Image 1: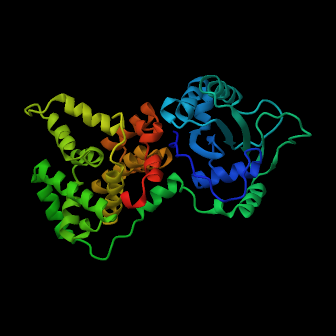
Image 2 (image 1 turned 135 degrees about the vertical axis):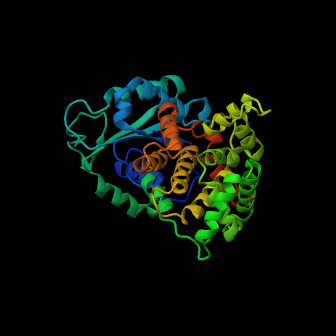
Image 3 (image 1 turned 180 degrees about the vertical axis):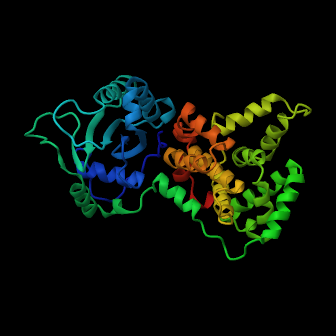
Amino acid sequence: MADSHTPLSEPEKTPTLSVDAPGDALALVCHSFGRLPEDSLVLIGLLDGCTGGHLRMDFSAAAATPETSAEQAADWLAGPQAAPAPQAVMALVFTEERPSPGPPPGQRLMQSITEHLEGRYAAPLVQAWLVGAGCIRDFWCRDRRCCPYPGLDAEQLLAETLQRVPQLSGPGAPSGRQVLDAFLTAQAPPEAPTDAQVAAAAQDGGRSEPEVLLSLWDIALRETVRAAAPEWAQQPQRLAAMLGSLASDDFAQALPVLAAEGPETALAGRLAVNPHSAYSAAMAKQCAAVLCGETGSAPDWSRIEAFDALLQLLISYTASAADPRRTNMVSLKAWVEWAKGCGTAASAAVEHCLRHQPEHGMARSLAAAFELIGPCAWARVKQHSYSWWRTSTPAEAR
């Protein structure tokens, strides 16, 4: 899967970086993705001397379907929905194989990407690097005198750039595995609900009307946005009630809609599945569009961010991988990361759920959606994406 585009960075007072310098190219990837990825095709857009529109795809899968993958990559990075589109693009191919003479891996894929970027979007692929087994060399060059095999020491070149440009040696973006590990190992605040409170809340939650439970969550979301922290939900009885509601798979599946669109849409979607309900099937379709990010506009990212914070708080009160509440929360975390555009974290979360509960309905549905849809529609439209909102919205307004 591909990770989302990121908005164009502002010029900074840093030493000049060059896409023609392999160490600089590696440093940009490491800073953008938090690491040098494996089995990956990375494309980085360039506009007015800045980088933006970073895209990562699984290289092996893309190379197996070069024409389709190239068309998708070019469209996601430089197509109409990617505005502001890059003027040019740099590519890096990461493989496990040591570069050697002969056609490079994924040659047809790279040729097709070049054709689509330049022919359809006037965004030439100005530089491509091949990285494998600790070596880096120009993807296209066959001249041994210019680019000897297997290439230059990638680790040494990266270290030299980071020493020259220490601003790029920060933490960068965490890997998908790191995101999931941090979520699973969250520590609970000191004041925790008792087991008896949680058990009572679970029973009450099963008897409560959807309006009551959704209202509780809606208040928690609004208060978390207001305070920029899930303080309101840390009161023991509220925590217990919210944990109890997560025992229901059906209720859990309404929460992404509640976060992205609000209580009216979430409640309507739940009631539309009832044949005796006055709500129309159109409302159920609207909820499905929200779950797939296919709303045609940006969601309320402040509420989705608050939803993520609430999940982080609540999962800290569960420990067993067999706990249905925990599995539901990990599935919901998968949806959040997918909506944000972090496909690797989303896939890691779904795989975690299915490893412990292979028949888990929400996790299986998300896995199918990831396979069928690819990146979330919000992440494919740059100005609808989480990263665009995150960097273009003042901190005090988030």
